[in-house]
Amino acid sequence: MINKLHGSSHELRGDPYRFTRRHLLGVVWGASTVALVGQFSVALYNYLKPQPVVGGFGGKITAGLAKEFKPGSVSYIQAGHFYISRLEDGSFLALWQRCTHLGCTVPYVSAKKQFQCPCHGSIFNRRGEVLAGPAPRPMDLFPIQVVDGKLIVDTSQAISRDKFEPSQATHV
Amino acid sequence: MSVQTHQNGSRWEFITQSRVWRSFFRHGWPDNPLDRSLVMTSNIFLHLHPVKVNRRSLHWSYTFGLGVIAVVLFGVLVFTGVLLMFYYVPSVERAYPALRNIEVSVPLGQFTRNMHRWSAHLMVLVAILHLIRVFYTGAYKSPREFNWLVGVGLLLLTLGASFTGYLLPWDQLSYWAITVGTNIAGYAPLIGNAVRGILLGGPEVGQDALIRFYTLHVALIPTLLVLGISIHLWRVRKDGGLAVNDSVTPAGEVPADEHVGGMQKTSEKS
Image (cartoon, rainbow over all chains, first blue to last red; front, side, top):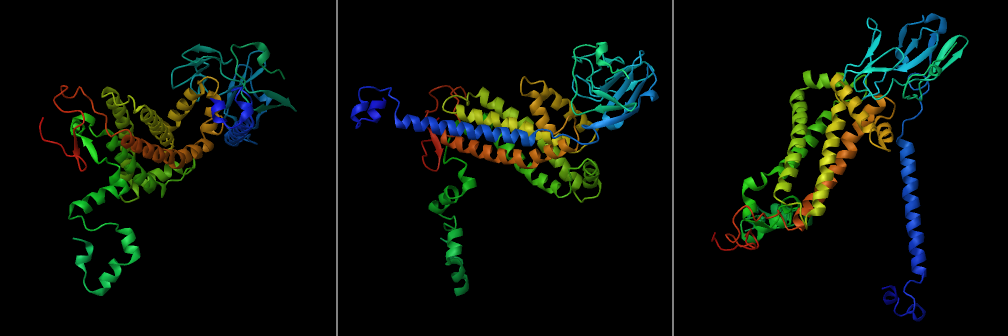
């Protein structure tokens, strides 16, 4: 086929698969197009992806003094969209309020010491473990830092986990 | 007879003979066969309807006019949507109050909003029925396969417009529906979380999500819909008009090439 296209060129007639200047330009053109589209796609994705937040939910939130939370209690930190759950051993979990099923806000029912999702009935205990319902994994955590006795919670990146382990809790 | 016969002195003649007038009215008054056909063929909107149509496809029960109904509903949605944009503010503090204002204070505001809402529901329904009709009449087959794909794209755009519009009232129903909906999108393999992040602009439904859904709803999706509908209608004509289904009448009763319409009128047998 190619030697027909280049029929006037004498030296091409013998080898139809010879890599010609036209092939080279085609490859250069194709690669440039792929590079351009790729560059555009990456730039567009970076433009549209969620931006980091300073202060408020999505940034670092001061939950309060560690000693203010009683062992065995769950406190809602509205500004950070998370609960501080202080376990019986005195360690802390910052549980994101978001249900791991489909993202509804999970209220804490203090009478039953459970998180009960109103959307599809998932139930979590104070360690965020799933007791019932369609939730596929325990409630997500935010990392806690202790600075001058205060709990500083970084809400920029949630930590998902398959099961509760004591090492997930922060000790003061 | 042409417009010029209505002349009332030289001033009217001056207007109707002017280059501007004649460039706008490109043919005479449609009181003769030539000008009547020019009304159709020189007008982009009337031109969308083919000159020739098959006799059998004229039965209303063949298509139920579902595609046309969907286009009309889209027109209603653009019109009422633009009216709503004069009052709606895509901010978490003002969206719901703006909506209440439209409903209780703006003359015909509630009517406008209801038109928009019901037309949106109907458009989704009609688009799906249209797809079903095309499937059961076999109209997706070659040479109309490309237009079937365009139609599927239009259905997805319609659902996208419906989904993005659902958040805008910013009430409890819309908030949780979009929360659940975007989390379902997050379950898609590989790209799920990226898609969810791009849609919401953050980890949860909030101001960033509202402005993004608004922009998609009033700018990007309608533009793509207009483009897609144009291609869709153009392809209907290029693929030879509505598909003829042989099973509508027994084979042989009507010749396969029999058409009615301006260009080719055949005998009245059958």
